[in-house]
Image (cartoon, rainbow, N blue to C red):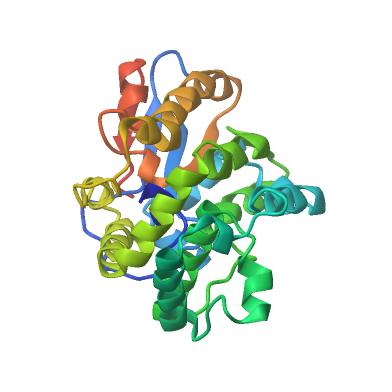
Length: 301
């Protein structure tokens, strides 16, 4: 489910008076503070100015780090690697991987969502060779865009911070590589587990939509507690993330980032712009930074 959540966003909500997505990191020997802001890639850039203190943080930071270097992500070579990673093994198609019953349920879902299904040769050519994980993410995106309108894919919310740093002659970096994220998103789970999660989306569309709406509402309210609660909604069956998947998608990555951040912050005041779902919780980045000895404070203005 978290894979689905991180792929979709575009609903507005009221910003709470005491809520924040931006945090200052100081102490533990830092000469100047750094900052971390929670993002969603598909949130509109206009939402940036709803975050108290963000302009001052961007000005104070001498470099900006995201999960990836977005400019590299959009290169032709990277896009080709991503496209290859989203495909099933050579010679395999979804209709060979799924049972007749599963294909029927998937086609019914597609017909409702797109008005066409995989019996259509054009759609089969586009989607019939995608891995279940890639198709799951793609369909979740289509579902959300159908409800909320088009998303500006060329001007992502997290990309904005890196573009501004570039424009101002500041350094830009990534906490992870493209290869690593491709592995996390598309290669670490068996095809059988991918298929199971795809059918979870197909068979529980209303639940998934509600959960996504709650996550998005919490993001725009800048309420990390509500965001964590919404992300942890469960069906209490095999559709829920298991501990290994939680570690792969969230917890292990958080821990890895917190081993890299100290050297970057010691080098230069840094603005980290990473997915908001990585910030809250006992194993979230904010708490891990505090455990490492830093003072982490929400920026109010």
